[in-house]
Amino acid sequence: MRSTEREGVTVASPRLRAAVAAAYRRAFRPPFEIPLALVGNAVLMTAAWFLVPPRVHDRLFSLHGPLAFPVVMASWMLGDTPSTNVAGLDTDTALAVLDEPRAFRIWLGARSIVLTSLVGIPCAIIALIIGFQGQPMVKVVSACVVIAVLPFGILPISAWLGLLLPYHLRPLRWRWDHRADWRRIVRWLVLLMAPFVVVPVVAAMIVGPSLALARLGFGAPEVPLSQPKFVLVALTICGSALLFGWIGLWGAGRLRQWRHNHLTRYLQDPAAG
Image (spheres, rainbow, N blue to C red):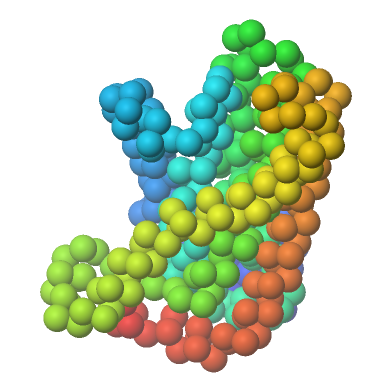
């Protein structure tokens, strides 16, 4: 497998540890699009959570309770283009690994690990802090583990959208100058908003079956789960997240093979928009 250097950063690595380190360096160098997107969504969600009127709050946020805030924050942070537009956000790396199936899986896996750490760990810490307020510690820790692990199940599958329909990072001025090409503008707007639909759907697919089985097997929905049952459900969700992550990486590999020529042509053409 080849290794390519750009601005001193290895963009293709034969080892997961080196690929994770390269993904961290890539995230924290200008233009910082990934950290800015994550922090921006976290700030926007926090402002909406505390500042909107109660009636609007109930419509905007379906989850309630002491641990709802970190869960919703994680979903908002993931619900943006870093979760989906994997090839368009890092064209050099994507082009470097498209010809190498193993390198591609390592790159996408490393990217998912980095984003999981940047979203899951801070939100889990927030859940831990909030959870001290009257919640059993076993449940709080279990919820923190779920929040920390869940993004890894979401990210590889949400990346499928970016492999099917990537787009280049372009300033709004460039988009405005090319507004006459309305199909390209509509495509960009749809893909810009798509993560806010894709991420919640994937999250529901991971969490939903475990919660449904818990309610069917452990009693009525209005009855709180005991601590052992809560831990069991949390472990089941974590297992589902890891399984979905593996399925996502496998599916992404199939998409790489199927879309190889299209992706290569698109990523090599900055004017494609």
